Image (cartoon, rainbow, N blue to C red; front, side):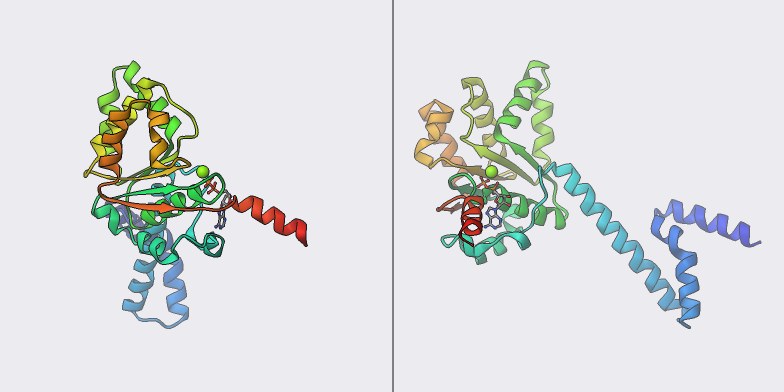
Length: 251
Ligand code: ADP
Ligand code: MG
């Protein structure tokens, strides 16, 4: 009788897609009995487990989909090291309202000041809100687009990228790209305009973007679109790691 009941229960839980309930209903029942809990408390404990596990799995999936090189959060970002960056602005951005408004964020600053860290942390915050993120280096994205173009799959590739709520383009300006690459990147950014957000990190002031894109008119059109609905965050100063090692040496 009990075996039949358990089998039936397992099959219902499978159909209802409640794997955590299936895995833990017996154990939680024992605990509830021992703790003299009533039926509703038992049900609550069981549902709580299901929700906790489901949300943790969803976040794990979102984070693996995003392909962050290293996972970093705002909790480990030392705001006192970047005086010109307003902590409140970043915390507000972490609420992710800009994603619903399809706004962009551009982080400008020299190497090592925390641009990738911040972009990743904002991406992780967006994953927590259930958003779909894709992190790529600018050079990596251009390569992917060139490959897709070669195999006549560029439209498909770009359509897939448009499904992401946020694309993080890391390191614009570190590696100069070919004219073809620049055009593809221009196309990509134009297509995303008002359809999905971008976070771009770069070491280049806007005036120098033409150096990597080559074409002046295209660069002007790109900047016009990118900065139309945009939070521009400039970080000045020295590399964080350099400052840290200087501090260590001084002790
Ligand atoms: P960038 O992308 O601007 O070159 P990164 O974000 O890669 O710099 O930062 C370099 C390293 O220093 C990373 O390990 C990052 O986590 C760390 N770092 C940079 N700025 C900070 C900061 N303000 N607080 C904590 N860690 C930081
Ligand atoms: Mg970086």
